[in-house]
Length: 75
Image 1 (cartoon, rainbow, N blue to C red):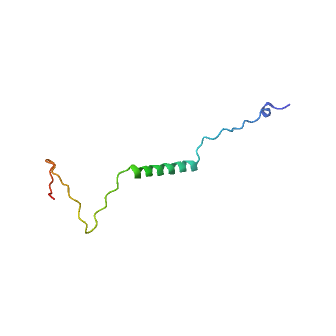
Image 2: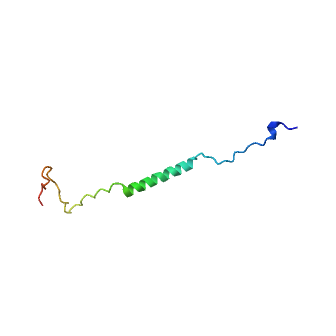
Image 3: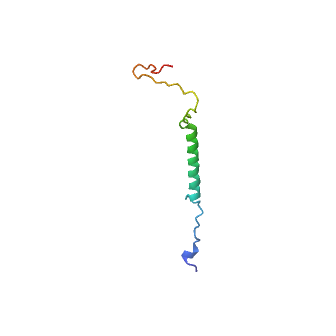
């Protein structure tokens, strides 16, 4: 006669594991950083204008009087 403990087959857990491994987390993090950086480059603030080179004409000054909104410097 067999014991009742040995007569039942052991249950094997065949369900997929829901744990995240380090490689998957690392790849997801790298992907998020790259997507965020690409979005920032596309939709972020415009790049600053380059300073004028030596010998080029300066851009016009558009200084306005705060009260009258008239130009302070005439061309």
